[in-house]
Structure formats: C-alpha cells, structure tokens
Amino acid sequence: MEKIFVFDTTLRDGEQVPGACLNPREKLEIALQLARLKVDAIEAGFPVSSPGDFEAVKAIAEKVKGPTIVALARAVRKDIETAWDAIKKAEKPRIHVFLGTSDIHIRKKFGLDRDKALERGLEALKFAKSLCPDVEYSTEDASRSDPDYLVQVVGQVVAAGATVVNIPDTVGYAVPRQFGRLISYLKAKVPDIDKIVLSVHCHNDLGLATANTLSAVENGARQVECTMNGLGERAGNASLEEIVMAIKTREDYFKFFTAVNTREIMKTSKLVSRMMGMPVQANKAIVGSNAFAHSSGIHQDGILKDRATYEAIRPEDVGITEHAMVLTARSGRHALKHKISEMGYDLQEQEFEAVYNEFLSVADKKRRVYDEDVAVIVQDAIFAHLDHSKLYTLESYKVATGNGEVPEARVKLRREGVVLEASAQGAGPIDAIFKAIDGIVGADHKLEDFQVKAVTETKEAMGIATVRVSREGFRALGRGSSTDILKASAKAYVQAINRLYWLLRRNPEADIYNPK
Image (cartoon, rainbow, N blue to C red; front, top):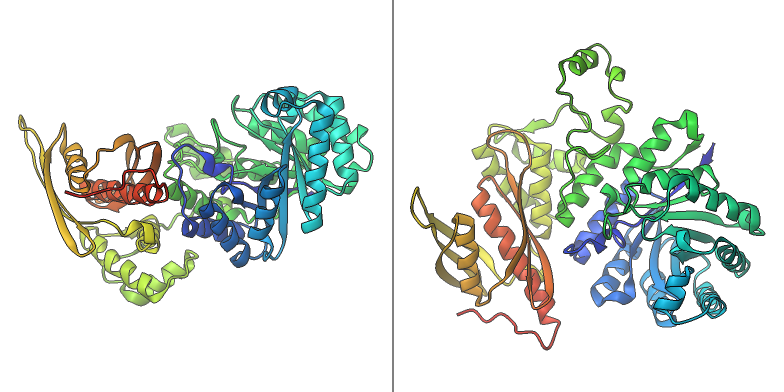
C-alpha cells in the first residue's frame, strides 16, 4: 500500500479562526503533541505576519523533532527570507510559497495577467529553493482556475524544483467528482509530475472538505493538508481525524495508509479545542462527545452483544478509554506525577507544585478526579506564568444576588503587588463581575463570546469558561477553570484583558489601561 502524507496546518490555517490567539508557548505545546500524533509535516505559522508568530515558528523549528516543520510565505522575497530565518534550524525544514492561479485572484488581487503571475511565482520558487532544498508551491484557488493554465503552472514549478505542489480548494467551491477529475487531469497532463508529491488543501464551505480530499487521494494526491477538529477560516478545513480514520477504517477500499498514531487523536483534539477556545460539537465525527455514545435501546443491546453492530471504529483506536477515573485526594504526589507523565506532559518542578496544589483543591470538592480534570489543571498551570498574563490576577470576588434583587459584585484584582477593587451591578452575577473588573482596569470591553462547559459529567464537575473580548479593534481570548463557574468566568475575563493589554502595548497609538 502507498503512504499518504499528513500535513497538519492547525497552527497556521487553523489559527485563522476569528478570535483565536495562541501565544508561542501554546503553539509549541500543540506542536509537540502533533509530533506525538506522528503527522508528517507541521505548518507552524506565517512568520512574516508578526514578531510573535516568527518567534513561535522558530521555537517549534528548534524544539520539535520528527515532522517536517513548514513556514508559509507569499511569493515575496521578504516573506521567504523571514520564513527561512524562522525554520532554518529545524531537523527537516520546508518553505511553503503560494500564489493564486484563478483569474479572479490574478486580476483582482494582483492586477496582473497570467504570464506575469507565473513569472512572479517562478521567481519566488527559485529564490526559496536557493535557501531550502524542500519547497512546497501552492496554486491558490486552484479549483476555480482554468485547468489548462493550471497544467502550465504546475508543469513549470515542477521543472523549477518544487518538491511538493499543492492544489487548494481555497473557498470550498469544489465537489468530490469534479475535484477528483482535476487531480487526475494534472496527473495525466503535467510532465514529470511523479517526481513531486502532489498535495491538496480543501476548505469546508459546502461541507465537502473531507470528501473532496479523499476523492483527490483516489485520483493521485499523496499529501493531505488538514487541521485538528476541522478548524480554519470561515467553515474550516478538512478534518485530520476524519481523513485519517476514513483511510484506516476503509483500508479495504482506499488501499493506502498513514503514519499517524491514531491513539493520540482524542488527546490532540481536546488540547487544540481548549487552547483555541473552540469547543467541539457533540456530534462531530470521530472526536465529538457523542461519537461513541449510544442512547437507543436497540443500539445499546447490539453494542452489549458485539460493538461492531453499531460502531465502525473502535473507540480505543482514537484514544478513548473506559477507565477515566483514576485519582482522589488521597492519591499523593507520586500517583499524580505518574498520571501527568502518562498523559504526555513534562512539567518543571514549579509547574508541578502549582498543579499539585490546584489538584488538592479540586479533589477536596470532588470525590473523584478524572483525566479530563487533570488535563485542565495541568494546562492552566503551564500557561499561568506567561509574561503578558501577569498584569492582573484575580484576588477575590463576592456576589450578592437573589430573587427580585439586582445582582452586585465586588471584585479585587492584584496588579504589581497592589490590590485594586471595585463594585458594579449587572443583569446577572457574571455580568456584574465583568463590569466590576472593567471598573478596576479603567476601560470598557465588548464581550463577543462567552461559554461555560463542564469538563466531566458529574455534578461536582470542573467548569471551563471561555470569553472573547475586544477593544480598539483588537480581540483576545481568555480561559478559566474552577468547580465554581463564577470564579472560572472571572479568571477567563481577567486573562482576556491581560492578553488585550499585551496586544495594545505593542500598538503605540493605543490607549493603554490606566486603572482608577
């Protein structure tokens, strides 16, 4: 069987979800998990887009071993130089250059004709090739391009030394049979196309990204570009977990394989969901909470007799286990350390102490502590000490409310050793807390999104609050966890404000927070 290469772009295209804001430490944590998942390539980012993204890509290139580390660049010399500077210390670096091939991109975006666009693309490719032996070239908006012009472009970039050529369905316009025919047409018409890896990158605007990707594979594509949980701009990208499990489960049909360690899929999905503040819908294929749940009596009876009656995929194959509960307040440091290591985390001593203290606090409130609880505690501790999150910390809060009364909150925050406090009334207790926090920092924020989700199904479950706030055109995401959802919400709001402050501080024209 032939291998299908899995190119993960969660940290680049997936991070383009509106409001998603990963800092370098978070991007590195996800990249390390993607390496455990054994993807073939990680598109770590778009280095020229910001100094923060450059540093994140550079750190991933230096610290993540195994996968090829890819940096995106427009067909612009500065982009390519910056991409190379970010990834040149990687074990296996790749520069990914892209330029549109559809007439709407060539004429409307660039004001060029087809010949000039091809000339620009080839010049960029050759420059990238002079820096890095592994260069991928993307024909942006390929699915809306003239097929014969696409043949011309792909033929010339192959001749110019590209190692991978990507055929994107940039706006999710294609349908499976048509997209498969396009790949087959290129395979038949482009000289020496077998010397490169032909790749596809499909978007999900019509809900067809996975189907289009698999159709392309059937017709000659050998690299699939995808994201965990299908994240990405607009309706997202083809889902890594769907593509990989379709190829694995229907090996009898596809006759291909991937190198992905599928038992790491669920852990990776949960990490990405939490870091990006994007909950996975319950009925999402493979990684949704209902993907292996059965409520129908007929289904339950069948499952008890033989799981294959109503499950095409074994839960174990994607990392779902039956034994979630493992820890209590009496488990001790050694047991907790063992569990954390078993889950794939490597903590510094200071981080472990913070995890242990929070674990004891949670364990005192819950009779049982689940793997999901431990993961939340660990991830909170890892990112609690990031530089840009140290401006304000939640000291305490108190809420007075009741039937027929207007809720009022008194909140205390600590800033640089000084405790600041304010009171505010709101439509509800959480609204009052948020307004009191705004009063302390001396600025109003627009709340764009607010969600609270239980980590496990018990009544004492930890809650994860996620907020998105904006100010002066900047957006930031905040997360907080606690068995008390008011506390979790307050922590999330404070973290979002800290991140906004960090963004605003880099903008010399911004009105920086000035607490009263």
